[in-house]
Length: 267
Image 1 (cartoon, rainbow, N blue to C red):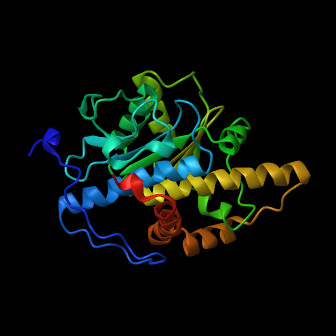
Image 2 (image 1 turned 30 degrees about the vertical axis):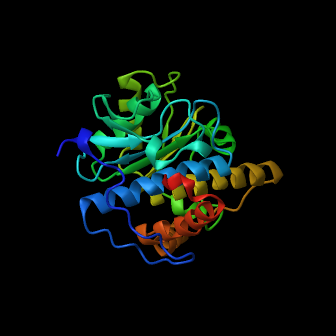
């Protein structure tokens, strides 16, 4: 089968029970794809709920499980709160739109194609111009481990400090991927946050959590001098609560919330 022949309705599985933290077994490629693109559509609805949608900015991608040089992404100009499975674009790593009749955000293509190419372990990446993330990014520094939640990002973040305008060229995307390195997240100075994961659930949860940590540090530093968690303790806290399974599980109540609000993202 060719990528253009993919039927995104194939592989539909029953929805998980509300409150369940048991992964849904997806045995076939079709089931794996359908499960993840449902999560991708839900991720956009969550970004809208958290106020991360703004104009044309923001994108989340998912590497296709069968064709790893292709990824699913949101169409340009569509509000996150309106995105459903049927609206998603399937894009080849050279920028060719294989499925979908809307254009792709050029910045989404250049940034995400570079990351997916440089990091085979990254199956999803999330970026938006969230107010706290972009405000914190202007400080040009990493998040400090000032709370248990912020400790999750200890030694899992980097900074891309060479802001060169909107990422409308291949070089900018490649430089962002290079700055990300082997980390899970990168702070794009004067721009915002970008998070990655082995699946959509992890990438989206990390973005939501990181933005909240940015907010927390901005508030704390405005009030006084925060007490920094020692390095060894921060590593211990990250080991306790930062596994892929726990990050995945943290997304599940949010998925339930979106499903209860309006399940039409599955359309």
